[in-house]
Image (tube, rainbow, N blue to C red; front, side, top):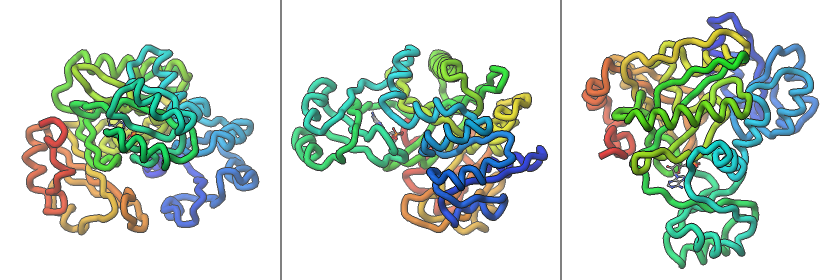
Length: 360
Ligand code: AMP
């Protein structure tokens, strides 16, 4: 999606991916190699003007290695912070951004003490390599704590208070090389089994204080990290306030709606930012719903028969839990979007795509 946004601007791309099957190979030159393979990194970086990443588990060592040869943006420190849930939370704390209550858990032996400190229910998360709900365990009873103590992987974790949130929101912000910033409107996100299923943009019924909290949080993180590019921060809306859950130093799934739903897409703005070009307007065009296609895809012709539905297939092999594509439905207003939603084919009439799911 980055390449597709950059080609009309005359940009050229080379991609690095460990998998020989990475679908990007169909649209851009690709170096296949492990992120730790110095030879592959050299070959990839040769002659490039700027390197960016769209996967936050790229090893920080690879980013530092590349940064000796070519500009790497967003700065590797952002990658380093986002890869470790404890560091991420500590950054939020330092910047005065409210988070869920948490405690570091270096060893499962300390689980009971951490749970006692925070109070049940809790979510235990591995500090590293967790995404889409992977590496997470919700514990609601003493029995579950006991079982978890035996079975948790022997890696550093954090224990978080399980938040009974009203809904999940995210903010997408972009900062250019000269420090200029732009923000997209807040997005409402619906997850199931830890995976994003549906985003509504702009999020309906956003109180001015909530918008202010999100925008201030984004501004602080961008500034603190001397950030360049698109940054996403995910929040829980809870009792009229926001609690920051995590950040993603990259274009984000909850920003895919911007391809059709905003004047400038997150992908184009990311590319503009890292190349020192003027940022584009982040204004939404009406209201959008972005539906992730996970594990299976509907028949293309069913989707294409729906006026203002836009289909994006990523060309990946279907696998349970895998994001295979998305559909964006656009309408002039949120009310209109809700009524258009009802006309989507049966594939989309599932509870996880229910527009009022988290808000009812
Ligand atoms: P994460 O990988 O931290 O983004 O978590 C994935 C999803 O799990 C989130 O989008 C929430 O739906 C849920 N989740 C994560 N942490 C918590 C929490 N502390 N309380 C309630 N739900 C959570």
